[in-house]
Length: 113
View (cartoon, rainbow, N blue to C red):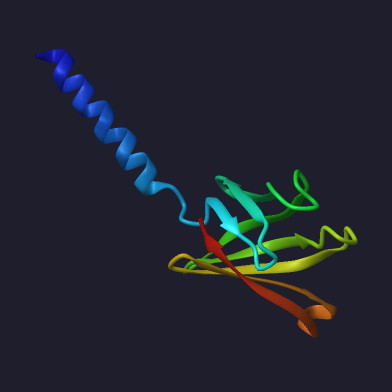
C-alpha cells in the first residue's frame, strides 16, 4: 500500500513540476526555419540546434513579468549583440533586438515546436 501511494505521489510531483516550468522553455522554430532551444531558470539561454549556426548560443533573457523577457540577443551571422526582448503569446514568441537605445530594431516571431 505504501509503495502505491509513494508512486502516485511521485507521479503527481513530476507532472506538477512540468506544469510549473516557465512556458518560454522548450524548442522553437525561428523565422528562418531553424530550431532554437531555450533552457534555464532565472536566466534563459537561447542556443541554435539546427541550421548553419547550430550549436551557437545566441541570447540570454530574464523574465520581466507578464510573459515578457529582456536581455541580450546575438546575430549569429556577424556575432553582434543587441539589447533584446521577447514577448510570449500562446505558442508564439516575438523576439526583437535593438541598437541606439531602441532607435533601430529588428524583430521576428518564433513558434513553439
